Amino acid sequence: MNGDILLMLSCLCGSNKNYTECCGIYINDQVKPETPEKLMRSRYTAYTQANIDYIFRTMKAPALNHFNAESAKQWAETVQWLGLEIIRSTIDKTKGYVEFIAHFSVHGKNDTIHEISEFHQLNEQWYYVDGKHEQAKPYVKVKIGRNDPFDFDIDRNN
Ligand SMILES: [Zn+2]
Image 1: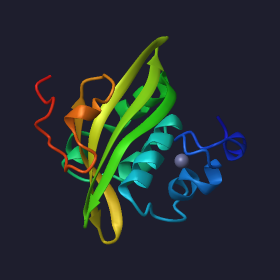
Image 2 (image 1 turned 180 degrees about the vertical axis):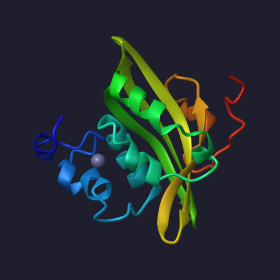
Image 3 (image 1 turned 30 degrees about the horizontal axis):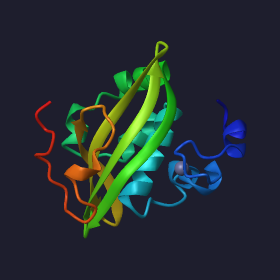
């Protein structure tokens, strides 16, 4: 998809805002994402564009240690992105977590990534630093109360 078409579309992160007023300002490096959730959304949108440069420059170790730009690009180009659901996001000073489900289709087969991503703020900029995959299933609200801190032992036996 070329840039001109993108400008007219609602942002693919599902915010219902125009791309140029949502993830576009981050991806075009006009502003740094102010929150982990905004960074998460913009990284999803960058994946829909197979914009691996943006993915690369918004991550740090340990996530960066096992990141392969070439295979990430190849994968992003193979996948058809269907939507992003933000389940919850939290910030505690310079640390933040975003739980999300990304929907996509690969070779005609629908799939999801359910992940709790960890973000750190360094020099007033948020970075993706780690991600824990959850089983691809609907979020079970009973297990994590709305106001409870994340418990990473939950459902971690898959
Ligand atoms: Zn967006």
